[in-house]
Image (cartoon, rainbow, N blue to C red):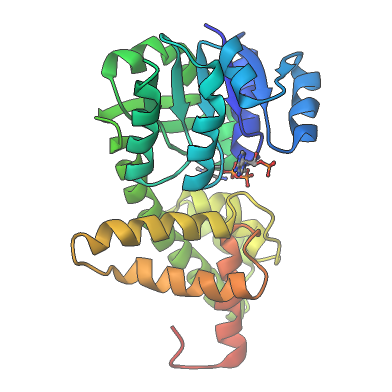
Length: 294
Ligand code: NAP
């Protein structure tokens, strides 16, 4: 199986490297060509001139781009190179409806589509430890299992097209709650004058331990917010969740509060920082001494 990857960002780069290790990577493409050329040179893969050329060369095409409109644009840009028997796997986080639209566009050319968003962060993409949640045909998932195994530690079929993205929405609401909890608690610890390296180690070894505390705690308390996962992208995910919740006539406190906090940080120019930049806000609460702040 020849696999191509479209989108050499924080996530796609790691996926391409691990596909290469498994002997599956044939080609890469990126909108900003320099990034694709650098990875292609490093791995001895082809840097395709456009998405259609990449699609022509590959049996399976993994896409990992930012937002809904970017996914749909890439689906259109691949069209000239797609033909029956090929499979497109979108690993971006987008709306259920975008997954369904992508599948419909490709079905016209007899091309299979899987929505396969991931969890595990940049580190998981680099180490081949991603968790895939997949919507689409179950047999297609099995056919592509060698590629999923190369990039991740699990790949679970959730149901029809869109169910991968619906599962990812659950994940993203949980990530918002974890970010709120960890940033708030660590800002409190720092304001209490504790040795924060020790706090993170001790608390992380108990029932409150979690991936985000372990990976981002040490950097956030030092005021470093290198992505990771861009705050602006998590804002995009929570906006998707809010739209899903609107159809249920529900407003969830964690979603609403986190969107509000992220919007404040984005307006202050922090949208391209890691989501742990929420710590900026929490730290400020202790400096401002505002008892009513939310
Ligand atoms: P990133 O580092 O910002 O990279 C985004 C990639 O998308 C870049 O390669 C960019 O190309 C490309 N892109 C954006 N718009 C495009 C368009 N219109 N046409 C073609 N390419 C386009 O983002 P990331 O962190 O890798 O995230 C990618 C996706 O995975 C997002 O949907 C994100 O929500 C999701 N995700 C991220 C994480 C994480 O921890 N980072 C975890 C799980 C899921 P350029 O280089 O030209 O800008």
